Image (cartoon, rainbow, N blue to C red; front, side, top):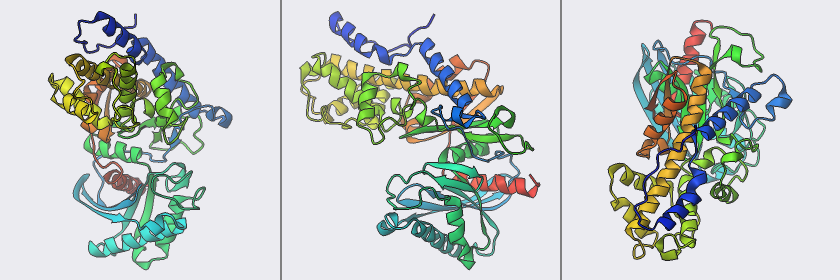
Length: 469
């Protein structure tokens, strides 16, 4: 029989208020049965995404993109490699030097892209990057060395090959009028080919940050087969056996594995997990930058968790259950309560304290209204939302583990939510152990999957090329 996860106690003598709060938050407390239903749905969506029939693939809310990365670090990588991390106003150029599988040098330079370049022709972006690589090689005395390059391109793209990524749309600070539908890998190669100083730099792979994360994890632990970004958004990649990919249309050669980029932030965009959606989730989506998209990550990711907590507190206040029914200007303002606030309150929950919670209440302009009961309710709401995050992400990871059928799996996690939320690791592990009992799972924090990970991808591609694979 399904059971509700353990939730914090509400320290209140008013049983009527307590009962009403429990009723309001009930849809947010997922049962084991509901988590299993989410897991089964993810599995079905992934099967659809990897179907031979393109019409069936269109029905899935997960892309399950072929990254064309066929292996992970094995400890024999050797040489000098470059990484390029492009995803915002600043980009980074990184030099990795490896000997016998170990990084012996890791140097990074950050470069700011001029405003006029961000809104000009797309070719100017690639030309500016190529010029910056020239300067980097000169400064680091790397000219004349063979340098495979891993290119993290953190924009929506469709991969057509290891070095080919078709831009779907510019995001963040980029406002170029063209470039959509073009091959970002080919554009960078074209810009580099114009410069004699870059004749020894060869694009080895174009990738996103999730692929870089699994590679960075495999460098730290050779049993790493899953990479997860758990920050302002969420995505995952994993190492899949090619025989399990129905849509695979290339020769099946050694190594018979490939990294699959699930793009599960959009899991549920087709309505398949609307059975867990609450009015608060609908409100978050309604006022988000991409309405109707990135459904899965909106339930828990760093960009949304704080707003979900605020909406619940606003509802409770308007019903007169907390803060004497007073809605302060801050409480009534969208996105005024951030995930940083929620994680501070969760730290109080972990330590059995209330000091940080009181500071958050003060920032909300409700210090004079707050009672011990109100403090207890805020802590309760933050824990409910955090537990739900652990159930959804932990359940999704468990579904991957069950799919892979490996006895041991290390999951590499990068991202601010995982790094700074004081209890999320434990909530994730509780659910993974519950829903994937046959797999011994370990979570490890990796940093800079988008930078160092890209260099490691270049190193692995270089290693395979040397062995004729």
